[in-house]
Length: 392
Image (cartoon, rainbow, N blue to C red; front, side):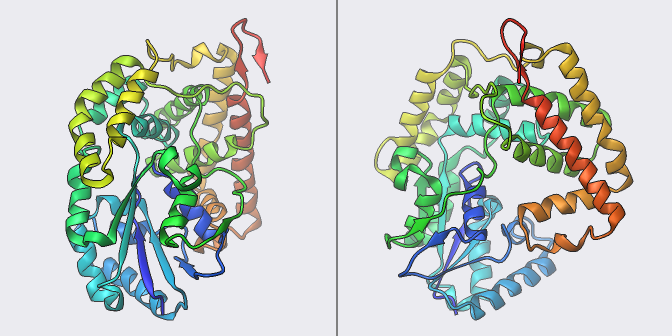
């Protein structure tokens, strides 16, 4: 049986994908402590059952699967990870642990990481554009986020602390404060409680950030799919796959880092400074989140970066992108699941989606979709220079 159970709850945009990838690929080595990761890439299905009260049957089913896993694994530490736990009610998770994992009820650990407010906004914006969640500008996105409660960190994490007490750990997503300056290394350092370990290098970055140029191109592509009424779940998968494909482009393509402008950074500081100070006082004992807000203002650009694709691509390039994006739609409408299942399988080899597309016709369909995505990624990597010459 697993001796100690750890729930890794995110937060979103805090390296969860990279942590989960390292666990799934078993990229750690520790001679002193044995770790049993969850079988799936992430436990989002389980976490989602804690967001609403009307899913008791699915909640019961998934927690019983974890019960069986925890009782039959022979490890010092078992890890259940999903960033969707961040929105769950801590008390409900505690009740479920007592009901389905009673052997771990008194010793279960909860680990979370928190990204400074302004840095979260910039990172989340790129992800939302990639998956079709927003088509607005970074400045408008920052203003919209300021109206929502999710980045009011202190009340949310204080609830986790009130339920789990000293068994809840909150880590700052600040490179200088992370073990080896890396969120994955920091995660293993925390759950192994300082026991020596080694990590194999990741083959690619999980869920890496888009450059300014890639964001402008992605907006054009997602706008095309929205206009052609591609369903949101499929746009999300297509955007995620396209982002992963961009990671394989050759070095040398023009890529500018996304940065906030001074007006947006200043507004975020005004909006979240009280929350930053409360978080610092309650969890860190030093002004980490406050300093991050100040630093965001100091490093901000005088004016917003242009997020109009015309600033980086020629008119002919943009037409070619739109045509390539539109060409994906008919085959996906004809068979909306085969390629999506293949994408899921590529993200997590060995998952249940691997048997979904065994037929020759489906295989050809899947290969055609990937070929078109590779073409799109290539088009996105061809950014024009200031004198309008195309950089390849």
